[in-house]
Image 1 (cartoon, rainbow, N blue to C red):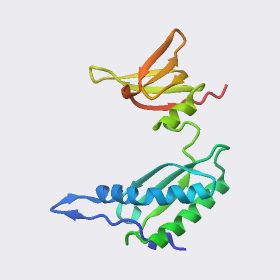
Image 2: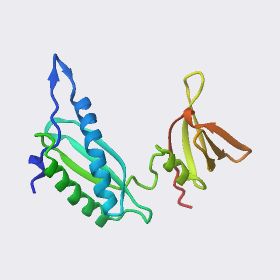
Image 3: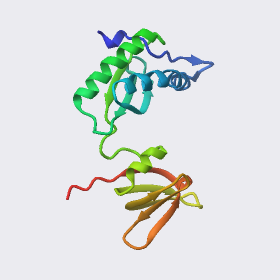
Image 4: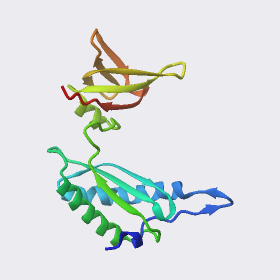
Length: 175
């Protein structure tokens, strides 16, 4: 299969305004449930899906996960299945490159289930402060609920409102 000719997204300009990113976001919302269902049938889950419009060099990145970890064979299987799904659905008429991978060991913490999985692990969190500045917190995530995180930073535990977290990831220590 020649992916350079596979249909997926069309990006264009209207009144000089680039709307490709908006079209791509709408298309991702449309295909997300289909991709999630296909991955679930393979024993995998969709971690994230990102589209980078760039004309003939557009890229659709799909990050997959599963409890036992993702192998290269999992990525190959998912890529084949998702590629066939996208071809059958025939959304758009623009070339793209499909990339399927694991989110990695130092995956970003984005959803409640990501924060729950991080309990007991070292994390790095970038926080928004009331004055608009960023503050970084490093430590072991001790607890998570829908509203707060508790992080042990080497002193007493710090309770952080989830709404203050701008970004975060599990920190990998190779000691």
